[in-house]
Length: 187
Image (tube, rainbow, N blue to C red; front, top):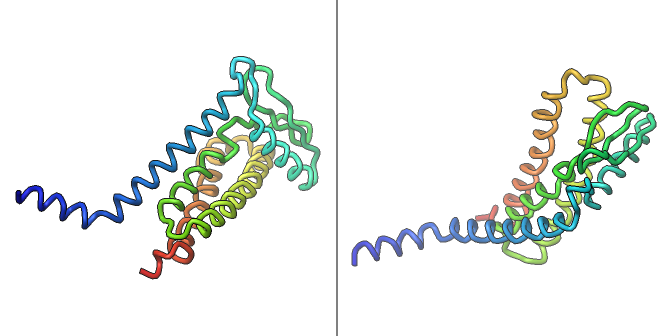
């Protein structure tokens, strides 16, 4: 009886954390599954690239062109990726993981797990998702630009600097959500 009482006490004590964990995992699993269903409609054996990645690549091309040099996006015949041609030079490639959808799902799962008001939560997820998307396009353009001029720094730029950029933005959005908008910050 004492063990059962202690278990109930622990459950009550950690109920907010357990609720957060369950909401986070459910959201993350459901939306990751839906994204995988979306991706599975593209045949990797035929090197098909998903429509979201193509859209992000084209937006990156537009931004690079705006930055002053000609840019183009070319389908890679050898793998499901897109070649980013900058100033007539093949500089980088874009694969599905570059489109930031997985990052947006992670962001949204955390926000949802800390939600009190569904309408405010959905609004913040949409606005945050758009911010992440926009900054991801900027990230890819800046990475391409940097790789054009500093190809010897590819490992540092692609593996450290630019992931810190996008995950740093996500972290700031999470902190803003918890402290200012979620309703938890006042407690």
